[in-house]
Amino acid sequence: MKIFLFFSSASFSYRMEDFISAVKQVEDEDPGSEPLAVLKRLRRAAEVNDPFIQYFLFSDLSGVPELAANLSDYIRKAVHHRVTEDAKEEGVVLTPDGTTVALRPLLLGIEAGLLAKTRGRVRGLYQLALARDLGLSLRQSPTVTRRLGPDGCWDNLSSPQVFTLSDSPSLLTTAQVNGGMDGVVLGLEVSDKSRRPLKLSNLLTEYYCHQLEGKGLDTAPRLISRRRRENFKRLGVPLLLTRQVVKSVQLQQSLTGQSNMERKEKKELMREVKEGMKEFVHMYMDCPPIVTRCMWGAKPYIGTPTNLALPLSFMFIHHTSTPSQPCLTFEQCSADMRSMQRFHQEDRGWDDIGYSFVAGSDGNIYEGRGWYWQGAHTLGYNSVGYGVSFIGDYSSVLPSQHAMELVRDQLASCAVGGGRLIPTFTLMGHRQVVNTACPGDALYSEIKTWKHFGKEPSEVLCEDGAT
Image (cartoon, rainbow, N blue to C red; front, top):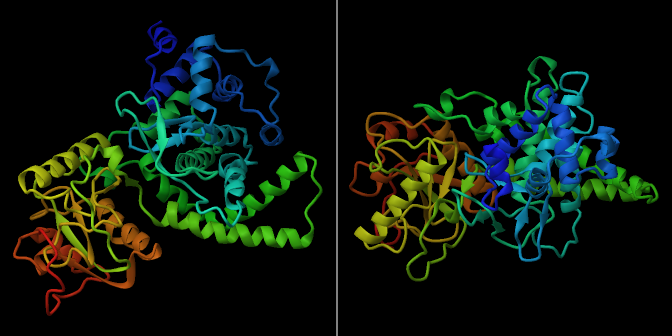
């Protein structure tokens, strides 16, 4: 009854936990219902059943029981995806790991996986979860500047209601990609009959709501949302996804009564998709998940930022010392970011948090001054390098291996691939150019073994601000 009253009020929110509560209510209405039956009821409520979906799921939803009006209305709003003219994205929810996920591709991927007769062979999985929408986005006119993304920000993190995109939208937003990746990963998982869940709510809870322990992702289960990108990358997707995008475009044309593609048209389509996939791989597989300023609650920059002249030549490694402990949740890492920004702005009198990026132990990189604004992290080198800090004191212990990999491998690769760092960039510890113990003895010894680590330069390049 409490759940019923919750969804009959106007105070519901678009958190993944709230959506899981709605799924539990659907399950409780028919305690013996299988996850497939629950998914069909959700799809009927959300009006997700076009000819493309029917082609793969063989779904006649006319005989599927309807949900109570109040619950059906919530499900429709939570699952039915669209972007409004004022850049509000609907059909998305905020997950505990700080990412925003579109539910439609997630649920379609899981349903396709549950229908599979053979483990790992899921009919329509990539098309339903990601390929169709990816094909629409990658085939946009050459005059369109954005083919993928953007991400966005919620109006409120404790009770999110409205998600607003941070830039002009493409036909495939970051939330759709997140949902599509999760749909593929979970769809393949449940295609194994021995791993099919008894309840859909249990599967979603285990995947999205796992709480990290002391060593963060180093000791966490494989199948959780914080590992979304690494699990998706491990599937060796790019070539497979390219083929599925092309097949999706052809199928869509066939279902709408258009004539079959000529050979020349197919070749041009393949060329367009291959080119677009390079951007997809860079954004969502090479780059780490980066929590934007508005998501961690940053205050505005004081004054006018100085833009960096890219590409840069250096990456400087720091630790925060204070906070001295690693952060393991999106909420705690965000609070640590706000605390550091207050200290830098109010106590030190700087314009903003000094670091370019900060690595948490929750699986995320946090945007400080970001890719384009000059930081205040390494006296004499702020204009020629990025300052990347790990939350915690690493004088005697190391950050988690996962956090170090985020910086050493993914953030660096993302910077080089995006033209923000030169391929031969030099990585250095803060102490190499400033009289400080930062980034701590243990972490400094570690980064000496990293690729791109370099010795002290012979001279200071430019005096450009605070340390």
